[in-house]
Image (tube, rainbow over all chains, first blue to last red; front, side):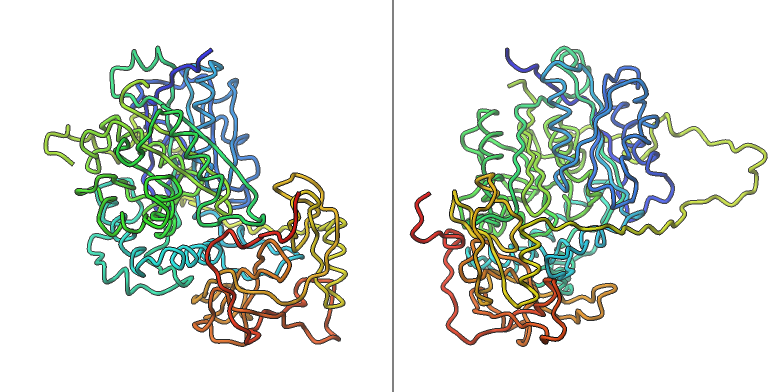
Length: 387
Length: 199
């Protein structure tokens, strides 16, 4: 029996900011949820189940937050499920929510990812001492910088490719009212001159620390057909994981990443990835991950991803494969929401509802997320037509 | 962006359900709003290392580095966790490794790290692949200017003085250059390459 066709009919985002002191964690989620329900034309009573996801509990120090949030999310007496796959969780949560409809367990699902970094200490949470390893205390930047250095060495990419990505994403963020960073006057030279934090990663090439939540309403085929507004049809979802340490592991393009991409493009019937996809929202917390994922996801040949960046191919303005038109993770990073924002922004593109950062005529878009030591992957492809 | 795009609704306007003004009970009139409270948390836990890591930590006190080999793939893991991720099997053999290897790749931290005054920026952290090991692990590269560290550079362990040795990975203060010729690195295939093994 074929899977139930599944559609996104509502997307809701909060304003992303360093500190949303005006709302509690529950209030943050309700803001995103209500916006998604409004766009979908639904109320709490229409929702069959709630699927939520966030990064590790000890970021905010609230254990099993799904339990305390059930009331705020209208989930009393309904199934609520929490997903956790580190930084990729927003994407994985979207995949799980879609599977609830595809498998005909539920007909209408609300899904939300969030993080309230202002109430947490991610640097501490990511640097727990382990008695069997030397603590080098460098956080996520210190973990990914050697991988980026390795990519630069293997490909001979020019040194300032990362700065080009950062400058592009920060400019594109100006077109997205929800983006955390709106740096109106940021010049390319300022990106280049910003201090090195985790050499070769500069300050302006790193993501900010954000509060925020992102929600979506997903429905079955009948629900999608009946919806009067724009609809994004799910053409494929895929998740893959791998150990972060085994012999021969390619840290630049992990096998799990390539397999996740192969699976989701096959589901969507896509052969020429670059030609057939109109917009990509990929998880780029450090600028160099754009060329690295362009290669790993098969949009560019190995060693050629940086050339796409250099040629402007990934720009909203004139590029043939616009990447992170919303400003991406480099402009807003509420960790547990960041993957779902990628999925939701892909949906908005094919709905024609992305506003100022809309790609003209986008019909098929990719949402992508990764997490842990580049070891957890989640992707989906959405289209304006049924597959 | 096209000119004929329908005018976006005010994206930042509160959803209708949340836009009604909140009316406080009279008893709370004039009370100062509380936006947040700070409640520090602490986690103390007892760590049970298990057999593989117990052997590894005990050997550390004698300035020896123990890895473990997977019988199915031949890969050697250090620090050993008793398991081979690709085979999904327990490791089968303890292997003593040299305290020399090379830099797989590295990071230079140029910002001060909170509560770690001992880590003075700039400092270099690196993935070190020990001779005979199939995976790299994180360590500090010392006794060299960070700008001079290279991918492929040969290094050896710098141990704490004998009288300070414990059953801890902290016995290795860092890794310093040996002065040997660099390893030639071409791609990932060579890391973890298993010589003369036919699983």
